[in-house]
Length: 240
Image (cartoon, rainbow, N blue to C red):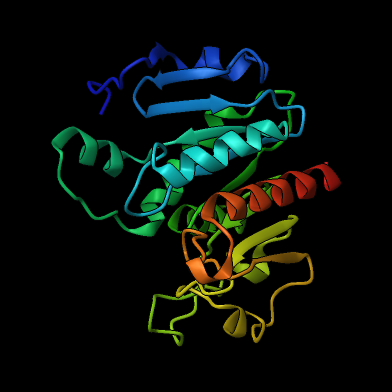
């Protein structure tokens, strides 16, 4: 894993990174023995450790755009890449993610590295699978809050296979930002679930899993991402 150094990423050891303030850790890094980390935003609006979805890493157009918008609102995003995604980029071929519990372990390791000794817990979140991983970790460890972008409530076409059994164990403030047409959980479906009281769902009108609306809606993906980022920043500020 550690022999793969992304372009422009500077090698750094985890002990040094752990001691840095949010402003000191801005930039693109390669943390020894675990992988790449890209940090954007000054952190005035809070810090969010954010994980990617199953098929695309932190540099995907969606992930890049939402991190830019969150930085605009003062939220620092610490974007990681799971080991299987690093391998996929190294080898130039599609590789499926491993078992979800393995990804939870990886995310927990990142939390240990990025939580400053006196800084308290981080906000966790992610796109689709990355959000699911973050929610599973939050069900077993203390985190400041959760931000779930396009949460995969169930596999597409299989609404009976709900991924909510661990949610009663989540006690932190939780925001779900979901497109109304998301095949992993539409508005009609999700509004029928008995979600915990501390979970807030913000609906993006006509958005799909990547928050892309139909042309007939008169809106754009960029506009929905901007709305989503503003909502996330306001939620984090309200629970600071």
